[in-house]
Image 1 (cartoon, rainbow, N blue to C red):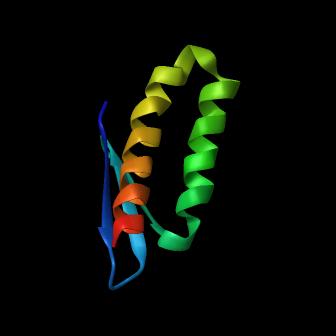
Image 2 (cartoon, rainbow, N blue to C red):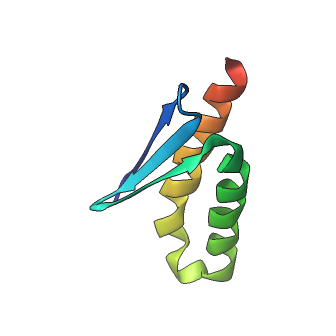
Length: 68
């Protein structure tokens, strides 16, 4: 299942969506969530591919923000 991440610069938030699940977080927490999903891959290797999409989407957002 694909993870999508959108950024609202005015609200200083990002929204993560995966299937029917969605949630919005402060952009200041972005690195915390990247680390969380990386750790999930390590803790639960049988589900690592499930978390790969999350990490990739969040890292892409981080790269985009740092280019601004």
